[in-house]
Image (tube, rainbow, N blue to C red; front, side, top):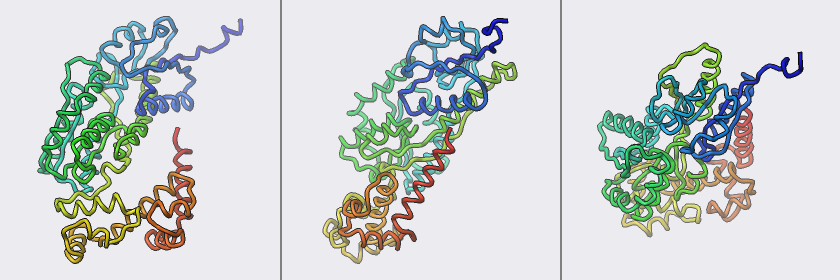
Length: 404
């Protein structure tokens, strides 16, 4: 026999998943991990957008299976390949094509719980009309709010049925004026779930245009935890982090079973999200006391400028005694303790995310000397700043080792 005849055929798997979004990249990582550890696949992938057409090379290549973000414009050419297909978009159901996606019910639950724990008792949702994932999250979030007996309102940008997701999402950019008007009608404070991080950025832009305070007036949480988008937002956007790697891994596992003749078409398999990545857009304790909310906003914005309680008294109509009493009744702390908590939170962030020395960090947290900062940090946390940084780096290294 020739060498080529002795070689075992290595299955070629086409991955039609965009790498332009964090969700798609994480999904691809999950597929790659399965291929690397469980099977011997050759993965074929071409950079593409969410609504891209099927690449020409697919039709002329020997493909043994497909994992794709399937939609109406791609299903027919994919069916012509006559190979197993797993859909990881779940935009609509196609006969004979099993699906794996993110559990929207769990997304709504984790977002609602996050906002509830921040003290919000009025809720809103903002999404894209005719986007399947948006309408699903709206349905589940509304049900949770109604079950809790809380006020609820929602807003969806205008759209045309059958439009691509890219077109629907792009329409939100020019939707700022009506969106801002709707935001102005919300009773404050309100906790809001947006259908994804792209919509979250649009909402935050509209809030800024309408001079609506975030998170004091409206707390906003997105979905996908796309750090490129979330960190571009002002303020940075909190977001539900889906288990996109888990979706990719399960899709690959299912495709392997289909290719081996061991599995039939199933209903959609939903993978629960991981957690909430909290950023400044929800980092607040929502309170109805307007004057107290104003003071809390001032402290959050200026604690690291080195303010004290005397500075806080200057911006409120309350006496020091009234302010102290309201803080204890509503928040369980004093204004001074609130200032310190805000400063320590900033120090923790800089210790975790940068290599700055304590001497460099001190003025950015409102302290003149690193020694005083170190003493307060140890008093409040029980450990030194150096020990905290060591723990954070160790935790990050462990997480990186565990990831596929």
